[in-house]
Structures are given as C-alpha cells and as structure tokens.
Image (cartoon, rainbow, N blue to C red; front, side, top):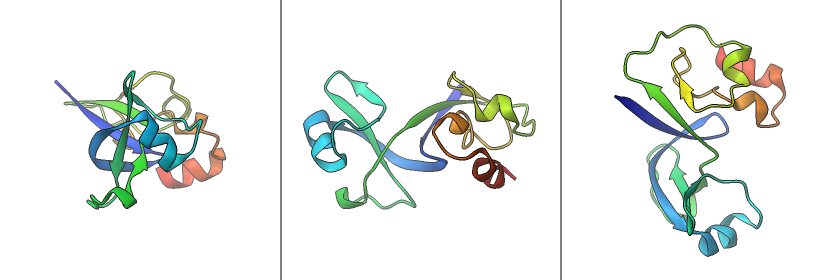
Length: 112
C-alpha cells in the first residue's frame, strides 16, 4: 500500500481537492501547469493547514510514496526522476524537482 503526496515545488500540500478548470485558470492564469484531477478539474492544495480558497496553491507533482521505503539518500536519480514512485529519505519532496526549472544547487540545499 502506498501513500500519495502532493507538492507545489518542494512544498508538501495538504487538504488537496479538485477545482474546476475555469476557476483554476481564473485563479492561477492560463495556461498554468497543474496536475489534472479529471478532464474538467485540476488539483489544488494548501500549505500549513490553511484551507481558505485565497490560500490555495496549484498542485504541480503527485508522488506515490511506498509504505516501507528504503530511505536512501537523495541523489540525481531522485531529483531528475520522471516517474511518480519515490522511496528515498526526502519523502518525495525532491522527487522530480530537478526538472522543475529550479537551479540544481538550490534543490540540493533543500535536500540536505
């Protein structure tokens, strides 16, 4: 059994829910990269438990975190991963984040 974690950049989001595409584009601009919930909606989430719509953040990555992960140290394989399965010590925060347009040194600093 795995746990799904939702991220915007390297920030983990909570209280994730769908938002209709038209509302999503009004809120975040069009075109905005986001994870699709279905053909009509995209995922949004919240940081630090805030749940007001004004505090909503677009979900950029969904990671499947294994129930019994190996917890190995993050490296280039995690930072530049294309898939959504992760089991390293970052808990999915850095999984695929190196391909999000952030400088690699900045991502590695957060991973340490």
